[in-house]
Image (cartoon, rainbow, N blue to C red):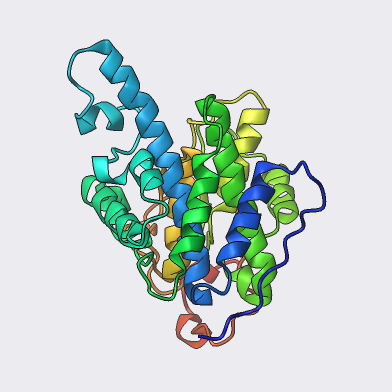
Amino acid sequence: MAKSKSPKSKTSSATIGFEQQIWDAACELWGHIPAADYRKIFTGLIFLKYISTAFEKKYKELVEEGEGFENDPDEYEAENIFFVPPQARWSEIAKAAHTPEIGTILDKAMIAIEADNKSLKGVLPKNYANPELDKRVLGNVVDVFTNMDMSDTEASKDLLGRTYEYCIAQFASYEGVKGGEFYTPASVVKTIVNILKPSEGKRVYDPCCGSGGMFVQSVKFIQEHAGNRSNISVFGQEANADTWKMAKMNMAIRGIDANFGDHPEDTFFNDLHSTQKFDFIMANPPFNLSNWGQDKLQNDPRWAYGL
Protein backbone atom coordinates (compact mmCIF):
# COMPACT_ATOMS: atom_id res chain seq x y z
CA MET A 1 0.00 0.00 0.00
CA ALA A 2 1.36 3.40 -0.91
CA LYS A 3 1.71 5.58 2.14
CA SER A 4 -0.24 8.81 2.14
CA LYS A 5 1.47 12.01 3.16
CA SER A 6 1.51 12.37 6.92
CA PRO A 7 -0.03 15.41 8.62
CA LYS A 8 2.65 17.56 10.19
CA SER A 9 3.10 17.67 13.91
CA LYS A 10 3.30 21.22 15.24
CA THR A 11 5.45 20.32 18.23
CA SER A 12 8.08 23.01 18.75
CA SER A 13 8.77 22.83 22.47
CA ALA A 14 9.95 20.26 24.97
CA THR A 15 6.80 20.94 26.99
CA ILE A 16 3.58 20.44 25.06
CA GLY A 17 -0.06 20.02 25.99
CA PHE A 18 -1.61 16.60 26.22
CA GLU A 19 -3.78 17.32 23.17
CA GLN A 20 -0.64 17.88 21.12
CA GLN A 21 1.00 14.76 22.54
CA ILE A 22 -2.00 12.71 21.45
CA TRP A 23 -1.96 14.31 18.01
CA ASP A 24 1.74 13.52 17.67
CA ALA A 25 0.88 9.91 18.49
CA ALA A 26 -1.87 10.00 15.88
CA CYS A 27 0.62 11.19 13.29
CA GLU A 28 2.57 7.98 13.87
CA LEU A 29 -0.39 6.00 12.56
CA TRP A 30 -0.52 7.92 9.31
CA GLY A 31 0.58 5.76 6.42
CA HIS A 32 0.13 2.58 8.44
CA ILE A 33 -3.58 2.28 7.74
CA PRO A 34 -5.95 3.28 4.91
CA ALA A 35 -6.75 6.98 5.16
CA ALA A 36 -10.49 6.27 5.26
CA ASP A 37 -10.07 4.35 8.53
CA TYR A 38 -7.54 6.64 10.19
CA ARG A 39 -9.92 9.07 11.87
CA LYS A 40 -12.27 6.32 13.05
CA ILE A 41 -9.51 4.25 14.60
CA PHE A 42 -8.01 7.11 16.56
CA THR A 43 -11.24 8.63 17.88
CA GLY A 44 -12.27 5.11 18.89
CA LEU A 45 -9.19 4.81 21.10
CA ILE A 46 -9.96 8.13 22.80
CA PHE A 47 -13.50 6.93 23.46
CA LEU A 48 -12.39 3.56 24.82
CA LYS A 49 -9.92 5.22 27.18
CA TYR A 50 -12.60 7.59 28.46
CA ILE A 51 -15.32 5.03 29.21
CA SER A 52 -12.82 2.60 30.74
CA THR A 53 -11.46 5.28 33.07
CA ALA A 54 -14.93 6.29 34.25
CA PHE A 55 -15.93 2.66 34.70
CA GLU A 56 -12.83 1.62 36.64
CA LYS A 57 -13.22 4.54 39.06
CA LYS A 58 -16.81 3.54 39.82
CA TYR A 59 -15.83 -0.14 39.98
CA LYS A 60 -13.27 0.57 42.71
CA GLU A 61 -15.83 2.58 44.68
CA LEU A 62 -18.31 -0.30 44.56
CA VAL A 63 -15.65 -2.82 45.60
CA GLU A 64 -14.75 -0.65 48.59
CA GLU A 65 -18.42 -0.50 49.61
CA GLY A 66 -18.29 -4.30 49.88
CA GLU A 67 -21.90 -5.00 48.91
CA GLY A 68 -21.07 -7.06 45.81
CA PHE A 69 -22.58 -4.71 43.22
CA GLU A 70 -19.40 -4.00 41.25
CA ASN A 71 -20.48 -6.25 38.35
CA ASP A 72 -24.07 -4.99 38.20
CA PRO A 73 -24.55 -2.90 35.01
CA ASP A 74 -27.48 -1.05 36.63
CA GLU A 75 -25.12 0.53 39.17
CA TYR A 76 -23.22 2.20 36.33
CA GLU A 77 -26.22 3.12 34.20
CA ALA A 78 -27.71 4.97 37.18
CA GLU A 79 -24.77 7.40 37.00
CA ASN A 80 -24.62 7.59 33.20
CA ILE A 81 -21.47 5.44 33.10
CA PHE A 82 -21.01 2.82 30.40
CA PHE A 83 -20.51 -0.72 31.67
CA VAL A 84 -17.17 -2.06 30.42
CA PRO A 85 -16.77 -5.87 30.38
CA PRO A 86 -13.47 -7.31 31.69
CA GLN A 87 -11.85 -7.91 28.29
CA ALA A 88 -12.48 -4.31 27.23
CA ARG A 89 -11.05 -2.51 30.25
CA TRP A 90 -8.03 -0.36 29.55
CA SER A 91 -5.89 -2.26 32.04
CA GLU A 92 -6.30 -5.34 29.83
CA ILE A 93 -5.69 -3.36 26.63
CA ALA A 94 -2.49 -1.90 28.12
CA LYS A 95 -1.14 -5.36 28.95
CA ALA A 96 -1.55 -6.43 25.32
CA ALA A 97 -0.22 -3.22 23.74
CA HIS A 98 2.94 -4.82 22.36
CA THR A 99 1.59 -8.21 21.38
CA PRO A 100 0.77 -9.22 17.79
CA GLU A 101 -2.86 -9.66 18.87
CA ILE A 102 -3.43 -6.04 20.00
CA GLY A 103 -5.60 -5.27 16.95
CA THR A 104 -7.84 -8.28 17.48
CA ILE A 105 -8.06 -7.55 21.20
CA LEU A 106 -9.23 -3.99 20.51
CA ASP A 107 -11.83 -5.19 18.00
CA LYS A 108 -13.18 -7.71 20.51
CA ALA A 109 -13.25 -4.99 23.17
CA MET A 110 -15.40 -2.76 20.97
CA ILE A 111 -17.75 -5.65 20.17
CA ALA A 112 -18.10 -6.51 23.87
CA ILE A 113 -18.86 -2.90 24.82
CA GLU A 114 -21.57 -2.65 22.17
CA ALA A 115 -23.09 -5.93 23.38
CA ASP A 116 -23.39 -4.58 26.95
CA ASN A 117 -24.47 -1.04 25.98
CA LYS A 118 -27.31 -1.03 23.46
CA SER A 119 -27.05 2.73 22.87
CA LEU A 120 -23.63 2.12 21.29
CA LYS A 121 -24.76 -0.66 18.94
CA GLY A 122 -23.07 -0.20 15.56
CA VAL A 123 -21.24 2.95 16.70
CA LEU A 124 -17.71 1.85 17.63
CA PRO A 125 -14.91 1.14 15.11
CA LYS A 126 -13.89 -2.48 14.76
CA ASN A 127 -11.04 -2.51 12.26
CA TYR A 128 -7.96 -2.53 14.48
CA ALA A 129 -7.02 -6.02 13.27
CA ASN A 130 -6.65 -4.69 9.73
CA PRO A 131 -3.41 -6.27 8.44
CA GLU A 132 -2.43 -2.93 6.91
CA LEU A 133 -2.27 -1.34 10.37
CA ASP A 134 1.22 -1.63 11.87
CA LYS A 135 0.62 -3.23 15.29
CA ARG A 136 3.92 -1.89 16.65
CA VAL A 137 2.79 1.67 15.98
CA LEU A 138 -0.68 0.91 17.34
CA GLY A 139 0.92 -0.36 20.56
CA ASN A 140 2.92 2.86 20.88
CA VAL A 141 -0.29 4.89 20.61
CA VAL A 142 -1.93 2.74 23.28
CA ASP A 143 1.07 3.49 25.53
CA VAL A 144 0.47 7.24 25.22
CA PHE A 145 -3.05 6.84 26.61
CA THR A 146 -1.89 4.38 29.27
CA ASN A 147 0.68 6.86 30.60
CA MET A 148 -1.88 9.63 30.96
CA ASP A 149 -2.27 10.79 34.58
CA MET A 150 -5.88 10.02 35.50
CA SER A 151 -5.64 10.74 39.24
CA ASP A 152 -8.20 13.55 38.89
CA THR A 153 -11.07 11.88 37.06
CA GLU A 154 -13.14 15.02 36.48
CA ALA A 155 -10.16 16.93 35.11
CA SER A 156 -9.19 13.94 32.99
CA LYS A 157 -12.74 13.67 31.66
CA ASP A 158 -12.57 17.27 30.47
CA LEU A 159 -9.07 16.68 29.11
CA LEU A 160 -10.20 13.70 27.03
CA GLY A 161 -13.14 15.72 25.77
CA ARG A 162 -10.85 18.55 24.72
CA THR A 163 -8.44 16.05 23.17
CA TYR A 164 -11.27 14.51 21.15
CA GLU A 165 -12.33 17.96 19.95
CA TYR A 166 -8.73 18.95 19.20
CA CYS A 167 -8.11 15.84 17.12
CA ILE A 168 -11.36 16.29 15.19
CA ALA A 169 -10.23 19.83 14.35
CA GLN A 170 -6.84 18.55 13.23
CA PHE A 171 -8.41 15.84 11.08
CA ALA A 172 -10.69 18.43 9.48
CA SER A 173 -7.77 20.76 8.80
CA TYR A 174 -5.79 18.00 7.14
CA GLU A 175 -8.73 16.73 5.10
CA GLY A 176 -9.53 20.22 3.82
CA VAL A 177 -12.92 20.70 2.16
CA LYS A 178 -13.94 17.15 3.00
CA GLY A 179 -13.25 17.85 6.66
CA GLY A 180 -15.98 20.47 6.61
CA GLU A 181 -18.51 17.66 6.39
CA PHE A 182 -18.03 16.82 10.05
CA TYR A 183 -16.42 19.89 11.61
CA THR A 184 -17.29 23.57 11.94
CA PRO A 185 -14.43 25.80 13.17
CA ALA A 186 -14.65 26.48 16.90
CA SER A 187 -14.74 30.25 16.33
CA VAL A 188 -17.84 29.92 14.14
CA VAL A 189 -19.57 27.60 16.59
CA LYS A 190 -18.81 29.90 19.52
CA THR A 191 -20.16 32.92 17.63
CA ILE A 192 -23.44 31.15 16.82
CA VAL A 193 -23.89 29.99 20.41
CA ASN A 194 -23.03 33.41 21.86
CA ILE A 195 -25.64 35.03 19.63
CA LEU A 196 -28.41 32.57 20.54
CA LYS A 197 -27.46 32.23 24.23
CA PRO A 198 -28.96 28.81 24.95
CA SER A 199 -30.11 28.40 28.55
CA GLU A 200 -30.76 25.50 30.87
CA GLY A 201 -34.08 23.71 30.68
CA LYS A 202 -34.31 24.37 26.94
CA ARG A 203 -34.26 22.15 23.85
CA VAL A 204 -31.47 22.58 21.30
CA TYR A 205 -31.53 21.16 17.76
CA ASP A 206 -29.03 20.87 14.91
CA PRO A 207 -30.44 19.26 11.72
CA CYS A 208 -26.96 18.61 10.27
CA CYS A 209 -24.99 18.17 13.47
CA GLY A 210 -21.69 16.81 12.14
CA SER A 211 -19.56 15.71 15.08
CA GLY A 212 -21.73 17.65 17.56
CA GLY A 213 -19.70 20.81 18.09
CA MET A 214 -22.78 23.03 18.49
CA PHE A 215 -23.95 20.95 21.42
CA VAL A 216 -20.57 20.88 23.14
CA GLN A 217 -20.35 24.67 22.94
CA SER A 218 -23.97 25.10 24.10
CA VAL A 219 -23.26 23.08 27.23
CA LYS A 220 -20.07 25.10 27.82
CA PHE A 221 -22.05 28.34 27.48
CA ILE A 222 -24.62 27.20 30.05
CA GLN A 223 -21.91 26.10 32.45
CA GLU A 224 -20.01 29.38 32.08
CA HIS A 225 -23.18 31.28 32.99
CA ALA A 226 -23.76 29.38 36.24
CA GLY A 227 -26.31 27.03 34.74
CA ASN A 228 -26.77 23.31 35.20
CA ARG A 229 -24.98 21.66 32.27
CA SER A 230 -27.14 18.55 32.64
CA ASN A 231 -30.39 20.46 32.34
CA ILE A 232 -30.55 20.78 28.56
CA SER A 233 -32.19 18.59 25.92
CA VAL A 234 -30.10 17.93 22.82
CA PHE A 235 -31.47 16.71 19.49
CA GLY A 236 -29.58 16.26 16.25
CA GLN A 237 -29.46 14.45 12.95
CA GLU A 238 -26.62 13.51 10.62
CA ALA A 239 -26.69 11.81 7.22
CA ASN A 240 -23.10 10.56 7.07
CA ALA A 241 -22.75 7.26 8.94
CA ASP A 242 -19.15 7.78 10.09
CA THR A 243 -19.85 11.33 11.24
CA TRP A 244 -23.00 10.21 13.09
CA LYS A 245 -20.90 7.65 14.99
CA MET A 246 -18.30 10.32 15.77
CA ALA A 247 -21.02 12.59 17.17
CA LYS A 248 -22.39 9.80 19.37
CA MET A 249 -18.93 9.17 20.82
CA ASN A 250 -18.31 12.90 21.26
CA MET A 251 -21.50 13.32 23.31
CA ALA A 252 -20.65 10.27 25.44
CA ILE A 253 -17.18 11.59 26.24
CA ARG A 254 -18.67 14.95 27.19
CA GLY A 255 -21.40 13.37 29.30
CA ILE A 256 -24.12 14.95 27.15
CA ASP A 257 -27.37 13.01 26.83
CA ALA A 258 -28.34 13.46 23.17
CA ASN A 259 -31.02 12.14 20.83
CA PHE A 260 -29.54 11.62 17.36
CA GLY A 261 -32.03 8.94 16.33
CA ASP A 262 -31.04 5.29 16.17
CA HIS A 263 -29.41 5.61 12.76
CA PRO A 264 -27.89 8.24 10.43
CA GLU A 265 -30.43 9.90 8.16
CA ASP A 266 -30.84 12.76 5.68
CA THR A 267 -32.89 15.52 7.34
CA PHE A 268 -34.27 16.69 4.00
CA PHE A 269 -35.98 13.42 3.14
CA ASN A 270 -36.49 11.75 6.52
CA ASP A 271 -36.76 14.17 9.42
CA LEU A 272 -36.36 11.98 12.51
CA HIS A 273 -37.59 14.77 14.80
CA SER A 274 -40.53 16.06 12.73
CA THR A 275 -42.97 16.02 15.66
CA GLN A 276 -40.63 17.84 18.04
CA LYS A 277 -40.48 21.53 18.94
CA PHE A 278 -37.27 23.29 19.91
CA ASP A 279 -36.22 26.46 21.69
CA PHE A 280 -32.94 26.89 19.79
CA ILE A 281 -32.03 25.70 16.30
CA MET A 282 -28.43 26.16 15.21
CA ALA A 283 -26.63 24.71 12.23
CA ASN A 284 -23.85 25.07 9.72
CA PRO A 285 -25.55 23.58 6.64
CA PRO A 286 -23.42 22.03 3.87
CA PHE A 287 -23.74 25.06 1.59
CA ASN A 288 -21.48 23.52 -1.06
CA LEU A 289 -23.79 20.51 -1.46
CA SER A 290 -25.30 20.26 -4.93
CA ASN A 291 -28.06 18.01 -6.23
CA TRP A 292 -29.55 17.54 -2.78
CA GLY A 293 -33.02 16.93 -4.19
CA GLN A 294 -34.42 20.45 -4.10
CA ASP A 295 -36.73 19.74 -7.04
CA LYS A 296 -38.56 17.12 -4.99
CA LEU A 297 -38.94 19.42 -1.99
CA GLN A 298 -40.24 22.62 -3.57
CA ASN A 299 -43.58 22.38 -1.74
CA ASP A 300 -42.19 21.15 1.56
CA PRO A 301 -43.96 23.02 4.41
CA ARG A 302 -40.59 23.61 6.06
CA TRP A 303 -39.86 26.26 3.41
CA ALA A 304 -42.84 28.42 4.44
CA TYR A 305 -40.45 31.25 5.32
CA GLY A 306 -38.13 30.79 2.37
CA LEU A 307 -35.63 28.38 0.92
